[in-house]
Image (spheres, rainbow over the protein chains, first blue to last red):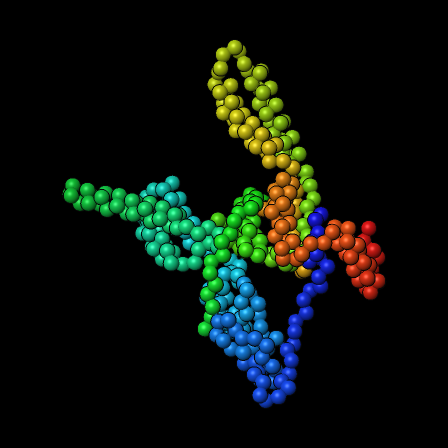
Length: 156
Length: 184
Protein backbone atom coordinates (compact mmCIF):
# COMPACT_ATOMS: atom_id res chain seq x y z
CA UNK A 1 0.00 0.00 0.00
CA UNK A 2 1.23 3.47 -0.85
CA UNK A 3 -0.82 6.41 0.36
CA UNK A 4 -0.76 10.00 -0.83
CA UNK A 5 -2.05 13.18 0.91
CA UNK A 6 -5.23 13.19 -1.24
CA UNK A 7 -6.49 10.27 0.88
CA UNK A 8 -7.14 12.81 3.67
CA UNK A 9 -9.08 15.14 1.43
CA UNK A 10 -12.86 14.99 1.79
CA UNK A 11 -15.00 14.86 -1.36
CA UNK A 12 -15.28 18.43 -2.61
CA UNK A 13 -18.45 20.27 -1.70
CA UNK A 14 -20.09 22.30 -4.48
CA UNK A 15 -20.20 26.05 -4.07
CA UNK A 16 -23.51 27.87 -4.30
CA UNK A 17 -22.37 31.32 -5.40
CA UNK A 18 -22.93 34.61 -3.64
CA UNK A 19 -26.06 36.73 -4.02
CA UNK A 20 -25.81 40.15 -5.66
CA UNK A 21 -25.17 42.91 -3.12
CA UNK A 22 -26.15 45.77 -5.49
CA UNK A 23 -27.48 46.30 -9.01
CA UNK A 24 -24.13 47.67 -10.22
CA UNK A 25 -22.46 44.26 -9.82
CA UNK A 26 -22.15 41.86 -12.76
CA UNK A 27 -24.45 38.89 -12.45
CA UNK A 28 -24.20 35.30 -13.60
CA UNK A 29 -25.65 34.60 -17.08
CA UNK A 30 -27.55 31.57 -15.77
CA UNK A 31 -28.44 32.93 -12.31
CA UNK A 32 -29.28 36.66 -12.56
CA UNK A 33 -29.44 37.05 -8.77
CA UNK A 34 -25.94 35.60 -8.21
CA UNK A 35 -22.71 37.58 -8.36
CA UNK A 36 -20.40 36.77 -11.32
CA UNK A 37 -17.18 35.23 -10.09
CA UNK A 38 -15.52 34.42 -13.40
CA UNK A 39 -16.25 34.04 -17.11
CA UNK A 40 -16.42 31.10 -19.51
CA UNK A 41 -13.17 30.57 -21.46
CA UNK A 42 -15.17 29.50 -24.52
CA UNK A 43 -18.18 31.83 -24.80
CA UNK A 44 -17.20 34.61 -22.40
CA UNK A 45 -20.43 34.54 -20.39
CA UNK A 46 -20.22 35.67 -16.77
CA UNK A 47 -20.55 32.80 -14.34
CA UNK A 48 -21.19 32.49 -10.62
CA UNK A 49 -19.30 29.99 -8.45
CA UNK A 50 -22.08 27.45 -8.89
CA UNK A 51 -21.82 27.47 -12.70
CA UNK A 52 -18.06 27.55 -13.21
CA UNK A 53 -16.55 24.20 -14.15
CA UNK A 54 -12.79 23.79 -14.16
CA UNK A 55 -11.58 21.47 -16.89
CA UNK A 56 -8.11 21.07 -18.36
CA UNK A 57 -6.96 24.39 -16.90
CA UNK A 58 -9.96 26.24 -18.36
CA UNK A 59 -13.15 27.56 -16.84
CA UNK A 60 -16.27 26.51 -18.75
CA UNK A 61 -19.99 27.14 -18.44
CA UNK A 62 -22.41 24.16 -18.39
CA UNK A 63 -23.59 24.85 -21.96
CA UNK A 64 -20.07 24.87 -23.43
CA UNK A 65 -19.20 21.79 -21.42
CA UNK A 66 -22.21 19.93 -22.81
CA UNK A 67 -21.49 21.14 -26.36
CA UNK A 68 -17.89 20.03 -25.98
CA UNK A 69 -18.98 16.64 -24.70
CA UNK A 70 -21.40 16.10 -27.57
CA UNK A 71 -19.01 17.24 -30.27
CA UNK A 72 -16.07 15.41 -28.60
CA UNK A 73 -14.00 18.58 -28.94
CA UNK A 74 -13.17 18.39 -25.24
CA UNK A 75 -10.76 15.50 -25.09
CA UNK A 76 -10.98 15.37 -21.29
CA UNK A 77 -14.61 14.24 -21.50
CA UNK A 78 -14.19 11.44 -24.01
CA UNK A 79 -14.88 8.11 -22.32
CA UNK A 80 -15.22 5.88 -25.38
CA UNK A 81 -13.96 5.80 -28.95
CA UNK A 82 -14.71 3.43 -31.79
CA UNK A 83 -11.51 2.36 -33.54
CA UNK A 84 -12.55 2.93 -37.15
CA UNK A 85 -9.06 2.02 -38.36
CA UNK A 86 -9.22 -1.43 -36.75
CA UNK A 87 -12.71 -2.01 -38.16
CA UNK A 88 -11.54 -1.06 -41.66
CA UNK A 89 -8.41 -3.21 -41.40
CA UNK A 90 -10.45 -6.20 -40.23
CA UNK A 91 -12.84 -5.75 -43.15
CA UNK A 92 -9.87 -5.63 -45.51
CA UNK A 93 -7.70 -8.42 -44.12
CA UNK A 94 -9.89 -11.04 -42.43
CA UNK A 95 -12.05 -11.89 -45.48
CA UNK A 96 -8.84 -13.02 -47.25
CA UNK A 97 -9.31 -16.27 -45.31
CA UNK A 98 -12.50 -16.82 -47.31
CA UNK A 99 -11.29 -14.99 -50.40
CA UNK A 100 -14.45 -15.07 -52.64
CA UNK A 101 -16.25 -12.72 -50.24
CA UNK A 102 -13.57 -10.09 -50.80
CA UNK A 103 -15.60 -9.10 -53.86
CA UNK A 104 -18.10 -7.58 -51.41
CA UNK A 105 -15.90 -6.72 -48.44
CA UNK A 106 -13.13 -4.92 -50.37
CA UNK A 107 -15.35 -1.98 -51.44
CA UNK A 108 -16.79 -1.86 -47.91
CA UNK A 109 -13.25 -1.75 -46.45
CA UNK A 110 -12.30 1.00 -48.87
CA UNK A 111 -15.41 2.98 -47.95
CA UNK A 112 -14.69 2.54 -44.21
CA UNK A 113 -11.07 3.62 -44.71
CA UNK A 114 -12.08 6.77 -46.56
CA UNK A 115 -14.87 7.74 -44.15
CA UNK A 116 -12.73 6.82 -41.14
CA UNK A 117 -9.91 9.14 -42.22
CA UNK A 118 -11.56 12.22 -40.72
CA UNK A 119 -13.30 10.53 -37.79
CA UNK A 120 -11.90 10.90 -34.26
CA UNK A 121 -9.19 8.38 -33.56
CA UNK A 122 -7.98 6.68 -30.43
CA UNK A 123 -6.81 9.10 -27.74
CA UNK A 124 -3.57 7.23 -27.37
CA UNK A 125 -2.82 5.77 -30.81
CA UNK A 126 -2.57 8.73 -33.10
CA UNK A 127 -1.36 7.59 -36.53
CA UNK A 128 -3.42 6.44 -39.52
CA UNK A 129 -1.18 3.55 -40.54
CA UNK A 130 -3.98 0.97 -40.11
CA UNK A 131 -6.32 3.00 -42.29
CA UNK A 132 -3.59 3.27 -44.90
CA UNK A 133 -2.97 -0.49 -44.82
CA UNK A 134 -6.72 -1.16 -45.02
CA UNK A 135 -6.99 1.15 -48.02
CA UNK A 136 -4.04 -0.48 -49.80
CA UNK A 137 -5.29 -4.03 -49.15
CA UNK A 138 -8.81 -3.10 -50.29
CA UNK A 139 -7.49 -1.41 -53.43
CA UNK A 140 -5.33 -4.44 -54.22
CA UNK A 141 -8.36 -6.74 -53.83
CA UNK A 142 -10.53 -4.50 -56.03
CA UNK A 143 -7.79 -4.31 -58.65
CA UNK A 144 -7.45 -8.10 -58.63
CA UNK A 145 -11.20 -8.58 -59.06
CA UNK A 146 -11.31 -6.02 -61.88
CA UNK A 147 -8.42 -7.80 -63.59
CA UNK A 148 -10.18 -11.17 -63.23
CA UNK A 149 -13.44 -9.82 -64.63
CA UNK A 150 -11.65 -8.10 -67.54
CA UNK A 151 -9.75 -11.31 -68.31
CA UNK A 152 -12.98 -13.36 -68.31
CA UNK A 153 -14.77 -10.84 -70.55
CA UNK A 154 -11.78 -10.68 -72.92
CA UNK A 155 -11.67 -14.45 -73.14
CA UNK A 156 -15.33 -14.60 -74.16
CA UNK B 1 -20.05 28.03 -28.89
CA UNK B 2 -17.46 25.71 -27.46
CA UNK B 3 -13.76 25.44 -26.86
CA UNK B 4 -11.40 23.01 -28.52
CA UNK B 5 -8.61 21.75 -26.33
CA UNK B 6 -5.28 20.79 -27.83
CA UNK B 7 -4.57 17.07 -28.09
CA UNK B 8 -3.07 15.66 -24.92
CA UNK B 9 0.13 13.69 -25.47
CA UNK B 10 0.20 10.40 -23.59
CA UNK B 11 3.11 8.17 -22.72
CA UNK B 12 2.49 4.45 -22.18
CA UNK B 13 3.61 3.28 -18.77
CA UNK B 14 1.95 -0.11 -18.31
CA UNK B 15 -0.02 -2.69 -20.23
CA UNK B 16 -1.74 -5.97 -19.50
CA UNK B 17 -4.80 -8.02 -20.27
CA UNK B 18 -8.11 -8.60 -18.59
CA UNK B 19 -9.37 -12.08 -19.34
CA UNK B 20 -8.21 -13.28 -22.73
CA UNK B 21 -9.65 -10.65 -25.04
CA UNK B 22 -9.55 -7.24 -23.35
CA UNK B 23 -6.28 -5.35 -23.55
CA UNK B 24 -5.67 -2.79 -20.83
CA UNK B 25 -3.06 -0.10 -20.75
CA UNK B 26 -2.12 2.85 -18.58
CA UNK B 27 -0.95 6.12 -20.09
CA UNK B 28 0.57 9.17 -18.48
CA UNK B 29 -0.85 12.57 -19.43
CA UNK B 30 0.12 16.04 -18.24
CA UNK B 31 -1.84 15.93 -15.00
CA UNK B 32 -3.60 12.58 -15.07
CA UNK B 33 -3.36 8.87 -15.73
CA UNK B 34 -5.48 7.43 -18.51
CA UNK B 35 -6.60 3.83 -18.15
CA UNK B 36 -7.58 2.32 -21.49
CA UNK B 37 -9.62 -0.88 -21.93
CA UNK B 38 -9.68 -2.03 -25.51
CA UNK B 39 -11.69 -4.84 -27.03
CA UNK B 40 -9.97 -4.28 -30.38
CA UNK B 41 -12.72 -2.17 -31.93
CA UNK B 42 -13.82 0.01 -29.01
CA UNK B 43 -11.68 1.76 -26.42
CA UNK B 44 -13.00 2.84 -23.03
CA UNK B 45 -11.20 5.48 -21.04
CA UNK B 46 -10.96 6.34 -17.36
CA UNK B 47 -8.95 9.25 -16.03
CA UNK B 48 -7.27 9.54 -12.66
CA UNK B 49 -6.10 13.05 -11.90
CA UNK B 50 -2.87 13.35 -9.92
CA UNK B 51 -4.51 15.69 -7.44
CA UNK B 52 -7.17 13.05 -6.65
CA UNK B 53 -5.10 9.86 -6.37
CA UNK B 54 -5.29 8.90 -2.71
CA UNK B 55 -3.10 5.84 -2.94
CA UNK B 56 -2.15 2.65 -4.66
CA UNK B 57 -2.99 -0.77 -3.25
CA UNK B 58 -1.58 -3.96 -4.66
CA UNK B 59 -1.94 -7.54 -3.57
CA UNK B 60 0.15 -10.43 -4.86
CA UNK B 61 -1.90 -13.10 -6.60
CA UNK B 62 -1.03 -16.75 -7.15
CA UNK B 63 -1.47 -16.62 -10.95
CA UNK B 64 2.27 -16.37 -11.55
CA UNK B 65 3.04 -19.44 -9.44
CA UNK B 66 0.17 -21.48 -10.86
CA UNK B 67 1.13 -20.62 -14.46
CA UNK B 68 4.76 -21.53 -13.80
CA UNK B 69 3.80 -24.86 -12.21
CA UNK B 70 1.57 -25.67 -15.21
CA UNK B 71 4.38 -24.80 -17.62
CA UNK B 72 6.90 -26.93 -15.71
CA UNK B 73 4.51 -29.90 -15.57
CA UNK B 74 3.80 -29.67 -19.29
CA UNK B 75 7.50 -29.40 -20.13
CA UNK B 76 8.31 -32.35 -17.87
CA UNK B 77 5.53 -34.37 -19.51
CA UNK B 78 6.93 -33.62 -22.95
CA UNK B 79 10.45 -34.57 -21.81
CA UNK B 80 9.17 -37.85 -20.37
CA UNK B 81 7.28 -38.71 -23.57
CA UNK B 82 10.34 -37.72 -25.61
CA UNK B 83 12.64 -39.84 -23.45
CA UNK B 84 10.37 -42.90 -23.75
CA UNK B 85 10.24 -42.70 -27.56
CA UNK B 86 13.87 -41.71 -28.11
CA UNK B 87 15.79 -44.42 -29.95
CA UNK B 88 19.09 -42.70 -30.60
CA UNK B 89 17.88 -40.67 -33.60
CA UNK B 90 15.37 -37.85 -33.93
CA UNK B 91 12.12 -39.43 -35.03
CA UNK B 92 8.81 -37.77 -35.97
CA UNK B 93 7.53 -37.84 -32.37
CA UNK B 94 10.67 -36.11 -31.08
CA UNK B 95 10.39 -33.40 -33.75
CA UNK B 96 6.72 -32.89 -32.87
CA UNK B 97 7.50 -32.66 -29.15
CA UNK B 98 10.32 -30.18 -29.83
CA UNK B 99 7.96 -27.99 -31.88
CA UNK B 100 5.49 -27.91 -28.97
CA UNK B 101 8.14 -27.77 -26.25
CA UNK B 102 10.17 -24.78 -27.45
CA UNK B 103 7.26 -22.27 -27.38
CA UNK B 104 6.28 -23.64 -23.96
CA UNK B 105 9.82 -23.17 -22.70
CA UNK B 106 9.93 -19.61 -24.09
CA UNK B 107 6.54 -18.82 -22.49
CA UNK B 108 7.77 -20.27 -19.17
CA UNK B 109 10.93 -18.16 -19.15
CA UNK B 110 8.97 -15.08 -20.27
CA UNK B 111 6.52 -15.52 -17.39
CA UNK B 112 9.40 -16.15 -14.97
CA UNK B 113 11.18 -13.03 -16.21
CA UNK B 114 8.10 -10.79 -15.89
CA UNK B 115 7.83 -11.59 -12.20
CA UNK B 116 4.99 -12.18 -9.73
CA UNK B 117 1.45 -11.15 -10.60
CA UNK B 118 -0.71 -8.88 -8.50
CA UNK B 119 -4.02 -7.07 -8.53
CA UNK B 120 -3.70 -3.32 -8.29
CA UNK B 121 -6.18 -0.64 -7.30
CA UNK B 122 -6.00 3.13 -7.36
CA UNK B 123 -7.75 4.82 -4.43
CA UNK B 124 -9.87 7.69 -5.70
CA UNK B 125 -12.20 10.00 -3.72
CA UNK B 126 -15.07 7.79 -4.92
CA UNK B 127 -13.44 4.52 -3.92
CA UNK B 128 -10.91 2.03 -5.22
CA UNK B 129 -10.71 1.31 -8.94
CA UNK B 130 -9.08 -1.79 -10.43
CA UNK B 131 -6.13 -1.27 -12.75
CA UNK B 132 -5.72 -4.48 -14.75
CA UNK B 133 -2.83 -2.96 -16.73
CA UNK B 134 -0.66 -3.06 -13.61
CA UNK B 135 -0.89 -6.80 -13.09
CA UNK B 136 2.75 -7.48 -12.17
CA UNK B 137 4.53 -6.40 -9.00
CA UNK B 138 7.45 -5.08 -11.08
CA UNK B 139 5.03 -2.97 -13.16
CA UNK B 140 3.45 -1.51 -10.02
CA UNK B 141 6.88 -0.68 -8.59
CA UNK B 142 7.98 1.11 -11.76
CA UNK B 143 4.58 2.83 -11.92
CA UNK B 144 5.03 4.11 -8.37
CA UNK B 145 8.53 5.30 -9.19
CA UNK B 146 7.10 7.42 -12.01
CA UNK B 147 4.01 8.57 -10.12
CA UNK B 148 5.57 9.64 -6.80
CA UNK B 149 7.24 12.85 -8.07
CA UNK B 150 4.21 13.79 -10.19
CA UNK B 151 1.76 13.28 -7.34
CA UNK B 152 4.07 15.16 -5.00
CA UNK B 153 4.05 18.02 -7.49
CA UNK B 154 0.21 18.16 -7.39
CA UNK B 155 -0.50 17.21 -3.78
CA UNK B 156 2.63 18.24 -1.92
CA UNK B 157 4.59 15.85 0.23
CA UNK B 158 3.92 14.51 3.70
CA UNK B 159 6.03 12.08 5.75
CA UNK B 160 4.51 8.59 5.70
CA UNK B 161 4.22 8.48 9.50
CA UNK B 162 2.32 11.77 9.64
CA UNK B 163 0.07 10.70 6.77
CA UNK B 164 -0.74 7.44 8.54
CA UNK B 165 -1.39 9.22 11.86
CA UNK B 166 -3.71 11.73 10.25
CA UNK B 167 -5.47 9.01 8.28
CA UNK B 168 -5.89 6.99 11.45
CA UNK B 169 -7.27 10.03 13.29
CA UNK B 170 -9.64 10.80 10.42
CA UNK B 171 -10.83 7.20 10.25
CA UNK B 172 -11.34 6.94 14.02
CA UNK B 173 -13.24 10.22 13.99
CA UNK B 174 -15.52 9.00 11.19
CA UNK B 175 -15.97 5.63 12.89
CA UNK B 176 -16.96 7.27 16.17
CA UNK B 177 -19.47 9.44 14.30
CA UNK B 178 -21.03 6.49 12.48
CA UNK B 179 -20.65 4.05 15.36
CA UNK B 180 -18.57 1.60 13.32
CA UNK B 181 -15.84 -0.56 14.78
CA UNK B 182 -12.24 0.28 14.02
CA UNK B 183 -10.80 -1.52 11.03
CA UNK B 184 -8.20 -4.09 12.15
